[in-house]
Length: 73
Picture (cartoon, rainbow, N blue to C red):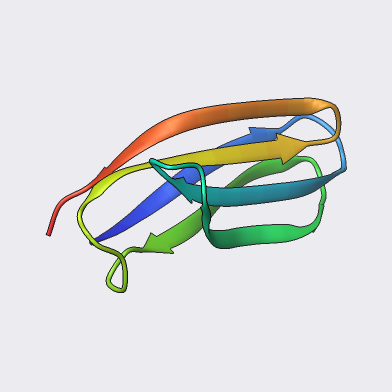
């Protein structure tokens, strides 16, 4: 139940990556810090989560994007 989420930022920014369950409740905060411009990866370990659909939201500066994540055990 582990996966790596990759992302790139074009300029220095405060980056957050949060995981929400299908009901919209915050399940985990994977990243919450300043990052320099570049490419990065963050590990999501879903061992303590039940199988199902989750969404992760990445925010960096004025950019924000949500993607679906399906967890199968």
